[in-house]
Image: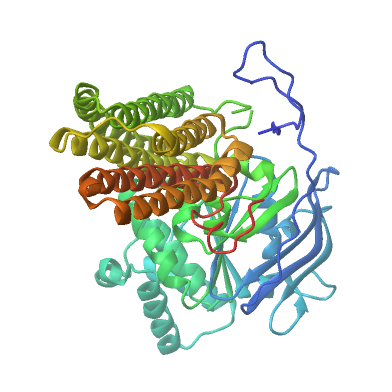
Length: 291
Length: 229
């Protein structure tokens, strides 16, 4: 392979042959995603994001997000994958000076989530998020799940009861939590807390669920439960997951996006990406050959 | 491989697998050459040697398969690394089968002692054998070198091997009509030619594996109209 990638995109000399050869930096341009035949839930169009300090974290990304499928975003640290994920529910709005460009279109309405006049709080109800480390509120299990509903202004106890149970069932934690709904969320194990956070995100019935390395703090058994849950949930909700675990991306996603230095280098069917990637940088990264 | 994996042990395992494939390929190609020579010269001692050496082929086959599974379990390779492991795992199966055909030629000679073949008949079989063994050696080297050009040469050469086999078949048919007394020798020659032709098919399969492991082309794509890029 003629390409070499490094975190700062400079050439490295790691050739095995003696004498060592200076390898070329790969200059293959990113591959544009092919047109998808399935229904889309969202699409990014020429989307860029710049932090308040001037760092351009995402550069001109075009990417489809298929409805009721799992899309995995992979790439080395600093590639922009978490920045991209957080853009999808406008988390960056919490800090002044951050700037979005382009469009994030939510289908089928065709609404631009980063358009003027769009309320970020409403966006976050439509696009839920679960983080790397389980972060339940210091409240009861019930109140954790009900929180998003209360933000929506729902006060009817019966409605909330039903929504809490539905969300806990969808997050596959109902059986473990039903007898201690008023107990502290902190009494749950790490894996249970993460599934509770997923239930909390599901309660307002989001159209898209964002998962930012949701199993990196969990043990293998808890990880397996969350992965099974993601597969099951993808039948009814669109999921975008950022993961450093490429085996996990290969196991649970339908589409995989590879990002590098803020660019979407390659996007495609997960099987194709992991068996026969088209871009040399994708190949280098997923095979573990980058500096 | 132009650059190193983060895990040196992984590169070492792939490198060892590739080297061992080359060794197994050399052993099988040598056995095929010895089997053809034994047949042409009616040398049953050489034939016995081929049969014994096939045990080594079988042992290497099992070791190679175990090594492939070991790499899959330990490193969960993806992309070209996965294709390399899967390609070699398939290719060792072809080598083992090619070795079986060499053994079959030798066993046939041992159970039905032949007579030395001479003249045009010897030239025909000798040319087929040489062509087949050259293809097999080239296919094995193409795996080690990830050489798609050599792999394509092997695939293209299969038609010539088939033509040489067909020529022997036609020649034997003519001779059968002329002398039924020679039928046992002639049928033997037919079987040997068929075994050599099958070894050529396995070389072709290995060539196709090279296209798979280097470019992701599924095996058989070239036979079903796929372009040999």
